[in-house]
Amino acid sequence: MVAWREMSVNDIEGLLRVADEIHPGLPESKEVFTERVKLFPEGCLVLVEDNEVCGYSISHPIRHRQPPALDSLLGEISPNADQYYIHDIAILPKFRGQGLAAECIKKLLAVAKRYPTTCLVSVYGTAPFWARYGFGPQPIDAALSEKLREYGADAAYLSRQNDLDCSRLGVHPDCV
Image (cartoon, rainbow, N blue to C red; front, side):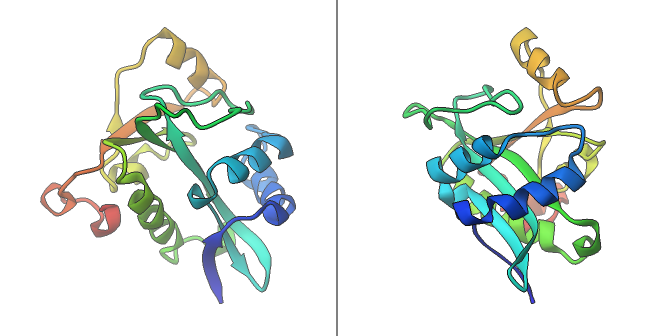
């Protein structure tokens, strides 16, 4: 059975195998993932089948419109964090199309409700996927534009209000 559970530092090697397959052009170090799970474990999940990691998600609070640069350590979660950030959701191809991403997003948005908004950096042309959960493009300043360049030419900064009534927007029912 495939299921999401909270990540531990013992899952990092499996996470790296998934990340290497899904994001070969966006490498991040073992130290970055280890730090995230230690700083904000409730925002870090792994998708497992028979104790093998086949997907993961990394998310945590940030200061509004200040997502971390790719492959950078945070040091701490700011005590003034006022926005939730979904850093990544990655699922191996053979596990896609089963509603597992939607299940993960629902779990992350339940944590994110503590903050007025949730943001992410969409890559690989996935903005239409994220739109189903109420995420839309936002204007960006020079500093954010610079960070986005690290993610590739198609990277887009998206955010959503966490108090959305998604049923009225015609988006995915799990977006709340």
